[in-house]
Length: 239
Image (cartoon, rainbow, N blue to C red; front, side, top):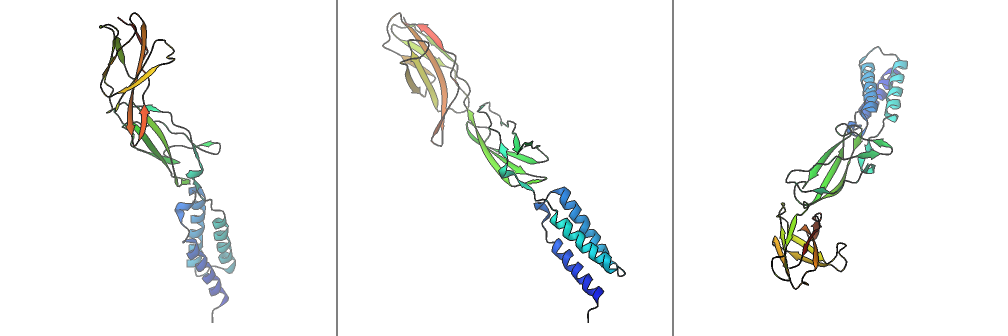
C-alpha cells in the first residue's frame, strides 16, 4: 500500500524527470535559468524525507509554472539581413559588416549571431551564413558579389586611321576586357569589343576625328559574367 505522502513524492519525481527532458538549447538563457532553479528546488524537496505535503505540492506547481514560462529562442531565419554592397577584388579575404534585425531590434554579432563567409576572396559570388547564438537559433544565408577592380587604359593614335588601346592588367585572373568606343563622349552608337589581351587596335577610323574609349575587366564564373567598373574615359585625335 502506498501512503499519500509517498504518492505525492512519486508525482514530484515524475515532474522532475519530465522537466529534465526539456532541451536547454531551445530556450533563452534567462527563462531556462528560472526553470533550472525550479528543478533544483524540486530535487531538494524530493530528497527531504520530512518535506510536508504542501511543500511537495508547491514544488510541483513551481516546476509547472517555470516550464510554461520558458521562452523559445527566436529563429534567426525570420530575421532580416541588410543587403551587402558589391565589393571589389583586392586579393584578400573580404568580410564586410553584416546588419541583422529581428523586428525593430538590431542584433549584436558575437552575442546574438556568428558570421561565416564562403568564397570571399576571389571574384564571384560570396555566401554569408548568419547562425543564431545566445537567445537565437537557426541560420540564414545571403550573398554579395566581388567584382574585378576598376580598369585603367591609355589610348594612342600613331598610325593613320587607327587607335591603339593599352590596358593595365587587372588582378584576379580576369577572363578578359570589354572595350567600348565611340565618336562622342556619351557613347551613343558605340561599339563594344570583348578581348582577352591587354591591348586592342581600332582601325578604319576617320582621320582627324576624335575617339572616346572606356574599358572594364570581366570574369566569367559558373556561367555568369561579372564586370568591374569602367576606366576613366580616354579620348584621342585620330591621326
